[in-house]
Amino acid sequence: MRIAVTLFFLCLLPFYGHSQDTAKPVAPDTILLNNGKVVITQVTDTSSPSVITIIKPGSRKHKKIELDRENIFSVKYSKTGKEDIYYIYDTLVGHDFTVEDARKFIAGEQDAMKGFHPVGISIAAFSIGFASGDYEGNFFAAAPPFFFAGIISYPIIRVRHKSVRDIKIANTDPYLYGYYLAASGKRELHTFLWGGIGLVTGLAANFIFQNRIQNVADLFH
Image 1: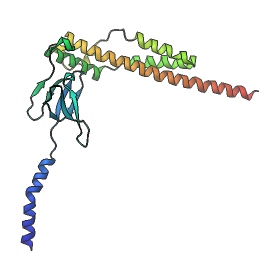
Image 2: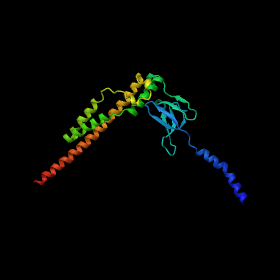
Image 3: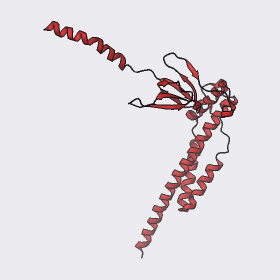
């Protein structure tokens, strides 16, 4: 009986080893997009001339989605370490940079997204929105914060050297242009966002204050 049980488990070992091998996770590939964002996932198919198929990041069911090749700068494969460049220099489709300059442009975008934080402008936008909402207490209160958001898009954005990963390219035009576009986008978003939050908070404060005044006035009537 013992011999039979031992033989049974020995027969199962190859299947167990095979299941362990198939369960090993596949190392993800690195997809660098033209907007500076990085997608870490597995590339499953690159045969299409217009899209590549990938596993949706974070999908437990390994759902497959497609990415347009025009939005991809490069794909670096984990198995081989090889990087395939998908970016093509073509002014007709808006690709005005060479491959090397495009890489610098993307580096500028990434450094701005990571290191540019418009804290002072966000505080100013919130303060203007709050003061306007609290003072006006009506529809016209939206004018000052949105006017501020409009004029704040003009000041020059300076590169913050602490956020620069490669100082050698920090003064090149492609890098500076990429940094400016990403940083100005963040600045405008934060200005509108915090201006709106301040406006809503100010309107709420005005409403509460006016109600309290009305309640106090009712006490004397």
